[in-house]
Amino acid sequence: MLIGELSRRTGVSPRLLRYYEERGLLTPERAGNSYRGYGEDAVPAVGRIRALLDAGLSTEVIRSLLPCAYGDPMRLEPCPELLRTLHTEVAALDGRIEALNRARGLLAGYLPG
Image (cartoon, rainbow, N blue to C red; front, side):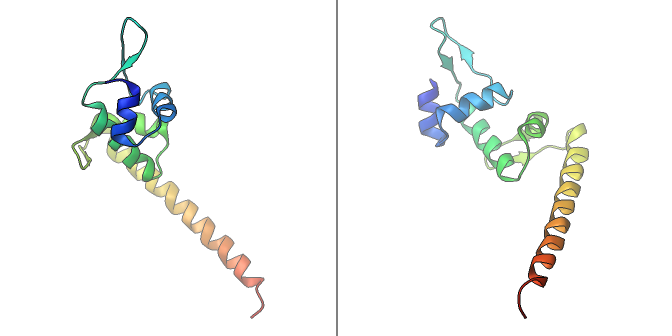
């Protein structure tokens, strides 16, 4: 299928699909006319990419996790890098949550009581 069809079927713009390709998340075939061609497996692959982006992961991290992702809805198979990567990402989120809570407390302290 061409990029327009993939876009229609996934609800993801062609521009974003090209970005996923640039980041190594999607690998289309190139026809003789240089058009991108995607197989049926691209539809659930885009869904997995979107789910991992919604979880707050960067495209770099997603590229490393995609070989461990399968199914629709997505499930993650415990690949060697997976658990270490997920623990690192959760720890980073915990740190950001703590920083936001501190900032919130400071700002709230400036409000008249």
